[in-house]
Image 1: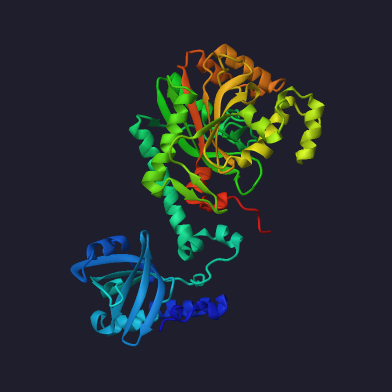
Image 2 (image 1 turned 90 degrees about the vertical axis):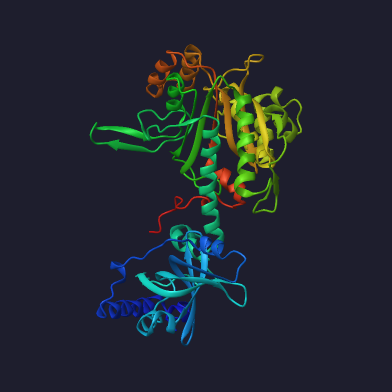
Length: 492
């Protein structure tokens, strides 16, 4: 049988590499260069299985292509498994069917090689749909062995650094990656059906605005000045509202020069959307409908188990609770917001919350919410009536100016989607920006403020952390499991 069929894990990788190089040279000496060949791929493995249906045989000739992931030689015949974009299909090769010369070449193939196979379809005695090959072509020789199929990649760092191997060896990783693609497609489909227009805005920005986050800085040689990688999509999308694009969204990467953790990656995917003549209540309906649409049309259930065993129930109405009520509840202090600042700091220390000297009162409340409240919000919860200091881009509440018309959607103990009734008063917006930046006046986005002075319609807006949403919908334990190539620490 082929070297790969014997199990490459039994020999050091360097020895396997040398053996496979010799096989490659043997092919080339015989006038066969696998890297110079191609093959026809008319069908996927899923289409092969569909063509066979419930029958035992089909005369239709199919042509598949993919990677050999299993190899079982039985003298004058062999079974291989071929992995392609839609899954795996078994192939049966017989010397009498493909010819003596082709079969003699085939038995030297290895697990990991990429091949093209054509033939008809039948069902084996065990019920397995199988391609009965009449030809096989080697189109790319694998010089390195794949991970052992029974153990896969056990080192978490190797999983993320060599994701291509993880996706070959780990069916769950492959399924999650495809699920993410389906989720992104369905998000777009949902918004297109609601008449949203998808646009693209700059990655390189002169002012890092739209969020409170530390940006990455880069230098543009042509202009001899520094730029920032965007930390938000907001300010350019609001310019589109000014331009008359009443329903607009963008899905793209944003960059925040902050920590790495189970729920944070410095480079992540965000979707931001804005709907003219809506408000944060409009956004509540939209995000609930969107997530439930994804549950129905991609996941297939409204009840999704998480890695820790918790089941999140996405159906029905979602809870609404005020920021202040949640903090009062978790601190067991009805008078929390009336307490002196020093008393709050003492209680925070007792809660195990460390705060910097000089921290403002609203930031103390924010730390309590982040450390004590947010981790307990496992089921979908709209947190409302946030303090005005937390977001200068949102409208003040008409009944009580201490609060803003905002919600934070928390699911699985983390924030997934903040949304606002957007501030469209250019004078009020300038005042709140000036308060936010203080003496750092160069960080005032005057171009955005000037755009607002041409009149922006009232609007609701929302941002959704796509990677976190995929975590919840697929039950992933770590945000790195939802990103094909996450940011990793250097290995040197």
